[in-house]
Length: 295
Image: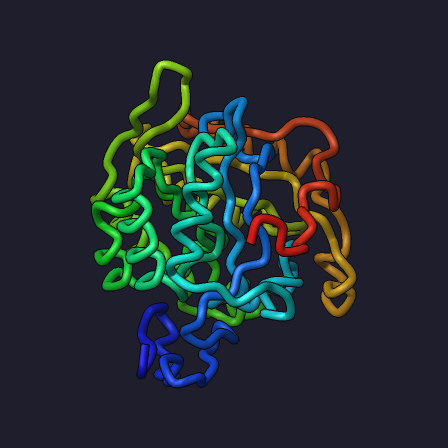
């Protein structure tokens, strides 16, 4: 991290000595919330809830980001690796079904240390790596044996959209290689007696207004590459927040027709292992308060 290459941007920042990387973070762990979260996919979030840790900073620049408050690094508390390991154990004591690391890419070395310490002290829960999908294969290889469940996004195939909306024209190239490495590590899904995933991969795709064609390309890639060996979560919860006013094409909810078009396409391809959302899920109620609870 003295010349950071953790994510595909390889910005080279000396984060170890206090310089901020593209992620807007130094090497010091900053987190904004650690609590039981009830809004994940059913096989991730059981009766106990998913023990989520939201890290500050992000390697992407999604203009529509639902967690922009923490992605920009404007909130959160600096903690040690020791404290992070304690947080994992505290979430387990609260009845969490797993440890869910949200936007963790830029803290991989510290997370590895914290997970190992927590396991030495009795952590038994599966570890979920919850990411925007823009990952370095070399960094992911460090996580083999640490992460049990990968929960990445696959946002786009289109280079134009990924540049315009996330400032990452190489998003698909990086994310597709990353997903293939994730799958190599965890393989086909494994569930416990309660129906909760203990190992495997779920890929999320958030449909954006006007981008149904690209959404179909995402689903096609996922199904042709992984078949029924992964779960695909097709999401309609896109919520237009104030920052998208500069992008009028994104300043609306996804229509029912757009969503059904993508879901019907997935079904027509043969997708069986999938999740869909029903009803009006486009609401800020999906966005938790980043008030440093549990940190």
